[in-house]
Image 1 (cartoon, rainbow, N blue to C red):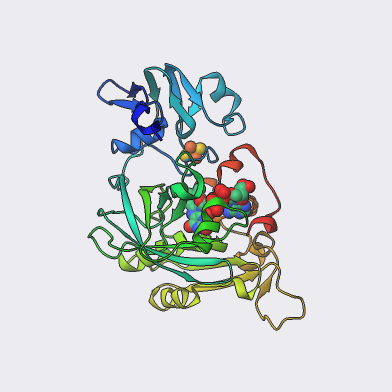
Image 2 (cartoon, helix red, strand yellow):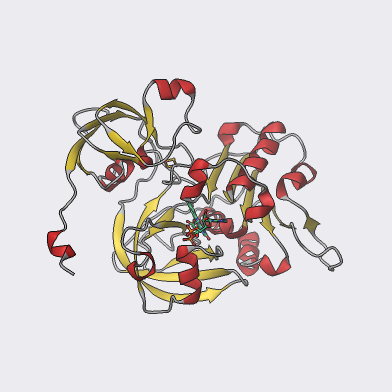
Length: 368
Ligand SMILES: Cc1cc2nc3c(=O)[nH]c(=O)nc-3n(C[C@H](O)[C@H](O)[C@H](O)COP(=O)(O)OP(=O)(O)OC[C@H]3O[C@@H](n4cnc5c(N)ncnc54)[C@H](O)[C@@H]3O)c2cc1C
Ligand code: FES
């Protein structure tokens, strides 16, 4: 009961990024990445759970506590040069790091706020559409995500947060007053079990954002978008944004992977995108577990094995955007690069959780 009276604030250190001009106070409880983002820096990052390697930086001096194993993400050379993952490193002394900050991207201020649940509406048997009203104005770019704190009554104050992609493009130039998310229930999952069983309109959540740099890049060639399960959320937001920005002229193929017909959702929204896309637009749902005797007239199987038949085998002029379970993304990237798509023209957002930081590829069908 008296805990909170005796709780000490964590020690703080100095974090220097590239030069003394970029020096900040860093709490021992915040990752180096979090401190950099809190100060508005365009620090490269994506997953924030130690699974993508985007936040790697060189530790020039100082000590950090590393939360996950980085060795499978960094090369032997990078390990020798003292590279670390900024999202998994807590300062334990004054720290100096070097990193190439991102240039030419819109850097929205990182906001931490409370948000009221407006509705939790089922889209399928295991995906809901969560609508939130943030109390503080929040700007983001389509493709980015927010981090939700797990409510204290669910898992205790020390539980780490969860990431969810914005499922709609920002509605206009003003900060968004309503936020949409598509969230799939993970059996046994701490946050999603609570969301599906107990969350109700009026309840409050703590959230922060925006994070990540997934988003449509400039280009002229055809686009292929690949969404697995709830990975449709940021892809839908990006395509809506392209239409709003009058950048919808490029030929686009959208592949949506789901288990069966009952797992398909947001088809009306996809149809609206199709109607407003000025270039060629093709939507292809692919079902991995549809009963063999059903009347489903569309494609079946896993997305990677369907790719060559859909896209052809000369993809050098394409750009690809993928979102969803990591094994699906890994398998698709292999196929796309095998057929000539340059690796630097493939952009993805893996729905990682912290367990992925230590594991390698699994079968695609396990996770969609
Ligand atoms: C950048 C980013 C964006 C994301 N956006 C979305 C989104 O828009 N919609 C969405 O539904 N999810 C999204 N996720 C995944 C989400 O953050 C959570 O990992 C997921 O909802 C599980 O949370 P939980 O607390 O219910 O499960 P946890 O308590 O974290 O996990 C319970 C168990 O399930 C496993 N597990 C966790 N996630 C999955 C999974 N996806 N599939 C199978 N097993 C899993 C864990 O390893 C653990 O063993 C995103 C993740 C990242 C990194
Ligand atoms: S952002 Fe640090 S590993 Fe992905």
